[in-house]
Length: 325
Ligand code: FRU
Image (cartoon, rainbow, N blue to C red; front, side):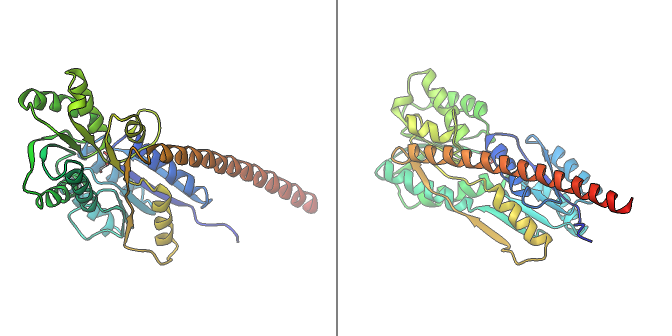
């Protein structure tokens, strides 16, 4: 028989934002190339308790593979181990866990991104200056690794000083609120390093309210394209720079399928980063817009192919009926 097995892939996202939306879109589009594959996406909305329930549900449903971006490593590790022990292949994306019980990881090296950001900032300030660090969710490996990389880069320059630090959980509004009070306490800030663009934009917003936005630079991470996101903010000059944090949902799906089809795969797929500053932000925007157009065409063609297949199989049914009768 040419009947293929129906595969279900459970995706547990820790959060809900443009970066994740893009990643989800890429996963769903890539899955179109594997006709018998169904992708179920759940978002834990930054709540580790909800994420544990989501993964428990996927275990009960006996999904064929679990893709997971763990909210807080410590809290979510046990349920991921449980899925793994139940024989479900686990593909970690973006954030990691405190355990070796997973099948593969797909993501950028967050330590390396933090370090690159640090070296960029040291250079930008010519080795001397007052920096504020706004960190992402405490307990998430991306936030921890970015912080470590950043501090290691700064450690080589004794005149670089981190004058304040705040945890804003990767959220824009929280970053704005926290930076409001930092601004009130510190008169001399040269640069704000935020662990993602949303927080950098929030900090910029706070500085704007008291007219101090021109006194300092803002650096973020993610480089999402589109109106109101990081790349555009760099192009417009609100942010000084950002670093690409690739979503690569297509790559994630390819690794999942290699695992399920018993083909070779890398246990650690390292996605690349790159600096986005004023010199290349517009180019990046143009390229991404072009890719969006191509993506739409892929989806359109896929729908057309589906329609043809439907027609073909109903014709075949008709022919079969004629022969039988
Ligand atoms: C998206 C996000 C990104 C950040 C990543 C870190 O949910 O907050 O902004 O780079 O997660 O894990």
